[in-house]
Length: 309
Image (cartoon, rainbow, N blue to C red; front, side, top):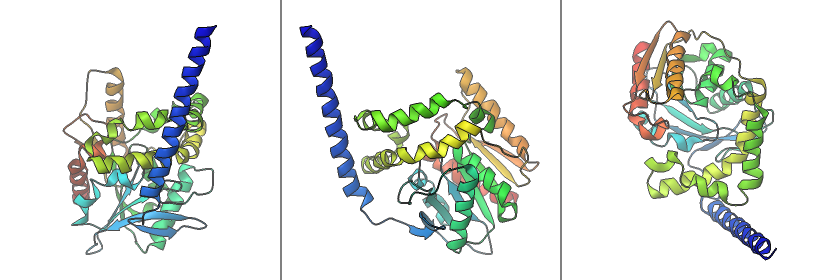
């Protein structure tokens, strides 16, 4: 019985330490990052404002390049890519509702709603079509939905290590949503999510100050991720199997060691069938966070796509 009491005290002590660690870290991050002046513009999209980082200039009615992040990520995901594109393009990265500096938006956060809000953002920011849409991972699904809803606005699509709808629809599992909810409601207040996130493989390519900011916003954004993935995990995502636009599929280098990597590579090749005007490019590494690992490859993908228009 004594050992059980000691164990209970130890567990309680660790939990209290975790709560204090999370509370003080979150307060420090809010003061350091959330209260700073946003680097971009806050643009009303109908009842709430989205934060957009708009750089560069367009010439001769060339397409503006629109950068769409994956779930659980914001405009910071494009911090290595956007400067490479700005010299020759008008470029827009942004925080979807609830992420980064953007205000929360109405639910459900379906792919259709995300596309509509992006469309409104671009209109209200006076960024006229045509657009090149670049989507990373789940962002690839979102830009495909945008292209379905607003085909006349889209000049071409760049899928960056994009998710495949078949793989996403196979995740139709309530337990995955519960896992994410437990992370936010239970494990994050105990400091465990922050402890793991600080060692996240995404951040290994960032300098120390960049990493601190990136991790801080990952923690802020965790709550916004749940209403965004819930419609997809519960109902799947329904996309056309044809994209009547020039298409570049940019994939990380194939790794034949793991079966799941071989399956991923096959789905990347399947994405090429979306368009009769498609090119497949590969990055040099097999790292799965290409926006940080190989930003130059993404810039090359945009240039390749412009040459196909």
